[in-house]
Length: 445
Image (cartoon, rainbow, N blue to C red; front, side, top):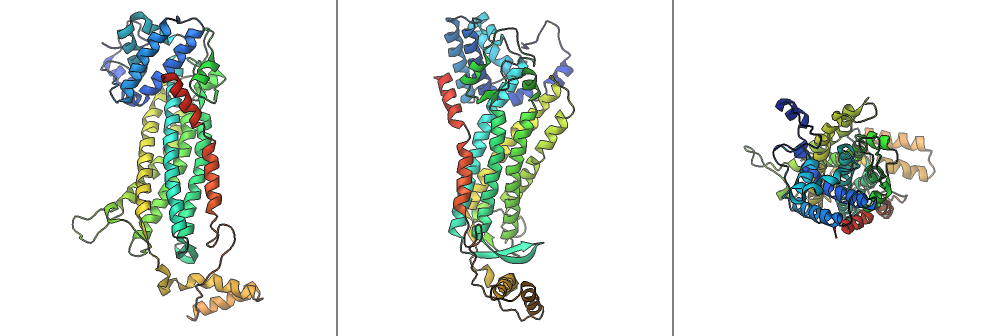
């Protein structure tokens, strides 16, 4: 039996229905727990304004908790002929509770219901991403400290340039992720605002208590204007997508470096054998497929904001079915990014560093700037020192002094990893994860 919350007794053409529903039933499985949580908060509020009886609320909450448990155990299904998660939850309630189950939709629309579901679900996913980024960050800092005294050549234009170190290389990516987390925090703040009560985008004549549902669900605040709440669909996803794409960009660059540095032409890093793959005809091959796939997947994620923009651009205020398509590209991207982060953590932990790279005389010229600076410190004008060392390089007479001494903040001899760690920890402390967890616990107790 088909179940549609908007059904008025007239059948929809089967092909039209198939096209308009699209992948919603598949995507909505992601949202089952969020939909139940939202309904629990909503009916608690409805009871407070007299739309649900005091004796009815515990019955509804108990049944919703059963549905939540099914979703948590992976047993929740959207049945054939049921349009979406909202319809399925309401159907399950009415099967068990009869007409009482039909009361839960008072004062809301599927528009604000899906807005709420998406925000609740996205909050959870942002927390998962932040935890994975932090784990990778910690791994990078650990490796930076472990190998801080091992030099490697720095490059500009893919030409050897100046001395760098593995301390700098690992630490650079750690700091990049710290900046990415700032973007994720901004996305969290916009996500963590309550749209429930905006209904179809124009509010309700019921005396809804929106502050109550905001508090029950652990939001920091609400989307105050009901028209803006609806306009926020697509905008929230786009802003979060920019944060995800920033993380993906850092990860993609790290993956590119790792692929290049593990090649025989460089030989700076060696992946654990169990993290490589082979060739069907070349018995010597140990390929960095994990980083190549990471690079490709992260480059795909970087296109996510553009894809969302192409869907929402130039839509006027109000709801349009175009917005449904955002789910299909937005929701799976979290799992893909989390997989890439997981693989990076595992592989970076096991990577081996070549501690004798600069024994090769082809890297001698990276010390030319050190010699120029030494002469300048002794009193020779910088331009004269530059010319002198340049002529020695051209004549093949340059003799490098590899005992370098860098002291300024963020350099080889003063990584300032402590500052990078403090930056990351400060950002993480501003996420209100504990508040959200407490709200969930309170609703489900």
